[in-house]
Image (tube, rainbow, N blue to C red):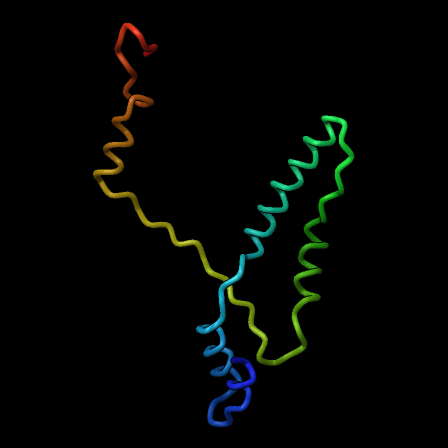
Amino acid sequence: MTEEIRGRDDISVAEKRAILADNLVPRHTITTTKRDRDGLNRMFKSAKDLGINPPEALSYEEVEGHIAAQAPNDELYVRVTMPRIRMPWTEERLAKFLTSPIFTGCLSAHRRW
């Protein structure tokens, strides 16, 4: 796809990059990558507490450096990420959640409340 767009002479480089951005598969954002790295680091620390010798997790700088090193030296290169879109809860779902036993309690001889 990149080579096909590169071969077009009727549009500017900025337009070529925009077309590529629309057609490429979105990747993880840097924030998501850092969050995943933090989770992995917590698992490594827990393993170390259990007496296992796990590998060291990469630092943030090493992660960002690796991502930057993978970027080709190409004027058409674009890294496409997908922002998280959170839909608001419906009133029905919110009402059901807030009236659940965890918020209202349970009155029964067999349950704590």
